[in-house]
Figure 1: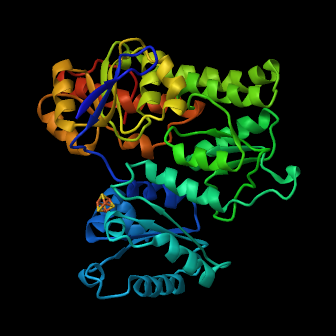
Figure 2 (figure 1 turned 180 degrees about the vertical axis):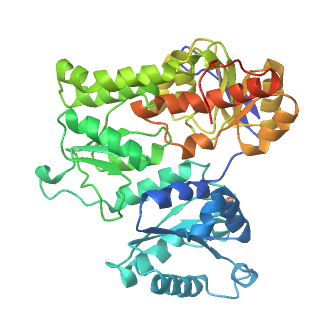
Length: 435
Ligand code: SF4
């Protein structure tokens, strides 16, 4: 079913599609979440399919004894011949005996566990009673029925926020919560900038340790560092925390606008803001300039993947001079994406959800210079002589903040440059070096 909705912004109406889609389920977000929260263990309650997905998506990481695993439901579980709760308790006991360093055990629901209505929240409550305080146990859904790719992180964060301590007095509450999983290097840079603006009691969510939980109450302001956090934002608002509205910190413009929104909310003077941001802004612009010859005027088509697409398209259009043909997103949170959508050039097609065959037809008809899509579509498009960029890299690579603005542009420039190298040869000194 395809429907047209007005986007309420400068762009063309949104193409809303429901049909065959080529996206990851929310389990895949465990791959970056387990690296971020260093004492958490993610136990998927699922099938061999889920285990295979994680094995393929994690790549070489699976050889480094990662902090995630799948409790595979066997036929006797599905047939009701075994008590699933007893089975899970046994697996958890074994796991915690083997890995006593686990501070937080996260049970992750999958399609099979949801289809048979296995109540993981009940299991988490029970296991928590047995194993807390040494090991906290919580749960969320990463199933393909409920979630697409980054929405797994959204559900995890909202489960975490449910556990956040409540303030005993107004002075206890965190002043600013920055929500959204960021690589440590990016978190450190943003933390330094926010601290230089003079803002104290700032917490990143998720923290690096499961015990690093912010106290959240009506005195707390929060800002999203990632665009896919609808449920997490709602959970924070339920606690009375107020959202600072901003576009997302991608590129020089995005990072400045994001920091400016924080500065305005906390009454930081314009002089101080300029002092703190002038040098990194200059560095970001210089790094970006390097890649502009590869991106200016290029026509780019985004397939839906992570909900980062509107922000990436805004960055490419406004900071790199690219032309955006279509921005696909698995889901558009109208409030959170409003700033990004308003900055997209007029005429950009927006699509929400997916009917992949129709989208492939639109993409072929528009014949873009670069297609940002998943790995399932990339090589077939390349075989047609089209250039692609794997969208999953935007979820795994540090791309937020000033110091990463050049790296973000490079991710888009790389396939264009590689193609030039392979097809026509590059003259010495032309363009930037891309690995
Ligand atoms: S959760 Fe569902 S979509 Fe994801 S791997 Fe398991 S069965 Fe597949």
